[in-house]
Image (cartoon, rainbow over all chains, first blue to last red; front, side, top):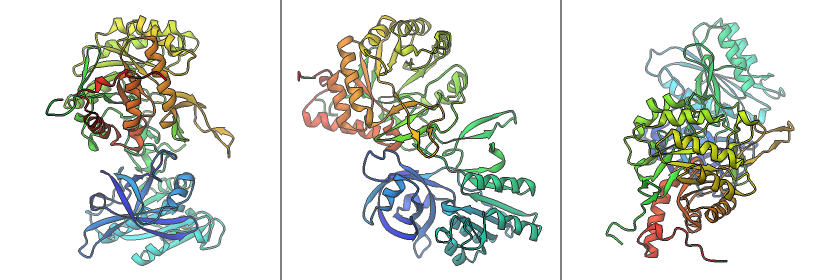
Length: 272
Length: 308
């Protein structure tokens, strides 16, 4: 974990209010695992005051394979992200990271498992990196990508470049399945009658809850990356708590999403 | 001036600090998380997240919301409880050369006494800081800290229950903070931490609901700096007790203002969230500033306010 003032290397527009910020930092990049996040200042100002949590999108490597930088895939959702969108290459921002518990990927285990990545909106951000690592370990990967409309779909090109089959869903039916992304997921599980798949999800809470229900019904493991407002990102402000079942099974407690998450085994969470 | 540069050490009553920069309660956990980013040995002290006898689960989210140059919080005093602190947190902190101050709270005077007694004699604690911005459930929920009689009563009760130096953290939500300062002094306080957060709220326009689950919360951050400075000014006029200045400090300029007004030390709070190296950088900046001013000791600055 490093707190660094970094120059923005690149700003790439990818959709309406959607953009990718690139940074060069060997220190941070070398530690990044899929599912990690950083806390990033949105401007050189005390208003807005707080940094924003952003998932690591891709790690940038040089020709020799050494991690030299990282990128963040951001969608404008409020004032902070709108200010980030106005940043230009060469501008400097404070970045703390990488932070949190990343996805637990079977990169050392036997190859050949099937891994289903389910995402909605900007929740897609961590998944190309997840797919990359799983493919490298010899696993099969399939992506289910949802968004409100065709133009807002994220990461579809990343998956296609990696050779990952993609199923798309849009709320307005402008591309792929007309409805939520759990539609194509359910259809796939029924048609394949698949018992050995592992699920991963990130997106709006109702979507993740639906994927959790599917995972439970089909007895499939599921990891979810949870989003919660954070002030510090390192576990001291206690803003980002989520309910988790107590270890002894009796009752629940609050877990810090930034420290014990953002990636959780979905069965640890108390789904309200 | 010695060869090693200006002397930053300060005394808060009987408590000696290597420098006057302290991390404020609730913004630094129990130190462990920050030890991964900064050298805790560089800090004058660390005030623990508010402790109660029993484990406290805290409020439902949303617990915080950003506001103009500040934030509101309503954490609900979530903490590991006395046993959790003594067994899991304090042993780690003993490895560092920094003063550890336990912030304590309760819902009744008896609860304050219980946590004070439980922590008394614990190795590695330099002082207690009393959070009196809590509703007294036996007195109809009136805050201990807004009623001079209750402030004096709870301070005296803890004073008698513990041999540790006692700092009382005053709430700014009162008409005359000087009256509360004198009440804490009468109850046996050794120093005053000025100020705690101010009450505030925001509304989510889309849902027309309060943004925080508990309706209101405590405002902190740069937005409260001038209020905190004025409260220190009024407290200084009311009592000679040592003052720990708190409120909106993120760097040198704010800290210097508190010292000039009479604070012997300062606490960095919300800045720890958005700038995790703010506190240790401030120690360096204070040393450099004293050196540039040809000041042998930071104490020369304390209470040096000139007339308007």
